[in-house]
Image (cartoon, rainbow, N blue to C red; front, side, top):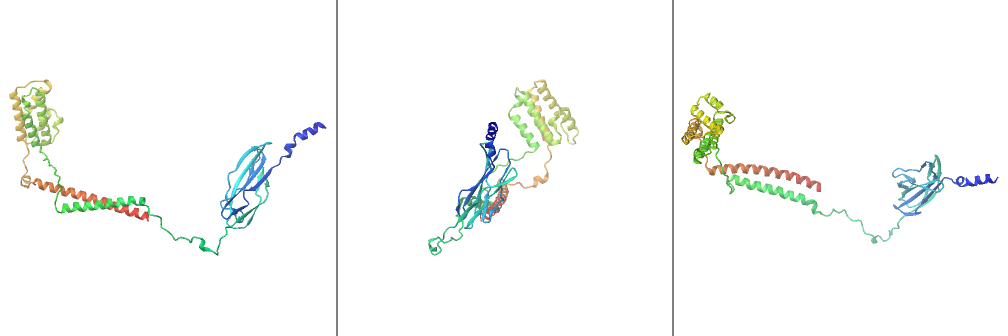
Length: 352
């Protein structure tokens, strides 16, 4: 008998445990629009599923009392192999009256449980309607204060657009009056193949390379000059051809002349450059004279139209160049100024 009584007393704590739901509110009185917090605490056995009610956005827990937030569900273990689950709901109301807060139903292991009913008193602020002069009257609609930082970019871009148009007008006036700026450009005349070849041969002669001990340099400069001239004058790439190919190509030309002298010159140059021969000075002079004579005899005839065409003076060339520069500058400034005006207008509309 004692043994049986001991077994019953051992299981008594577990038999005495029951699921419970506790419902409490942090304040029974709030002013209109203020918030109150409804806390629901559930004790259950470990492993049992607890389902608390979840309200939709702006749903009423009771007519006149709105649920703003469902809160976060928190769970912690307590004694006797049990668990405590809590959730805090945020409530508000905009009507001054006494509200009945019903007990929320909580499911524990599929069964419904609930706490106790509560009350919430919503208070209103007393307004002295007899002495309205104590209160400030409603203010008129006011424009926001002027913020210079918002307009700074617009003003700077507008000034830049204005400067573009001012400079465009200035350059237009100078172009119309045909007045160049005090800047002069040097015009370098493009030499013809004949003029370029003669200039290089004269330079070789003035540097006295034909009497230099370094005959390889002399013949290299002389043959390079002739190759460049032949390529420009006769239309084939003499710079990439050997002596025999150059002579063969020249022989096919209708106005080819001094082919034998030119052949002897190139063969002599090959001997000096590749076989390190030393030629007599008089032969060097003769080859230089033959090169100049070949260039002179094969130069193209000047066109009569070019001879009859009047040449522009240096001053006229400067004015013509400046008119072209003015035209380009005016066009660019006008285009940039127009784009800036459009952009400034768009910014202005956005700021209004």
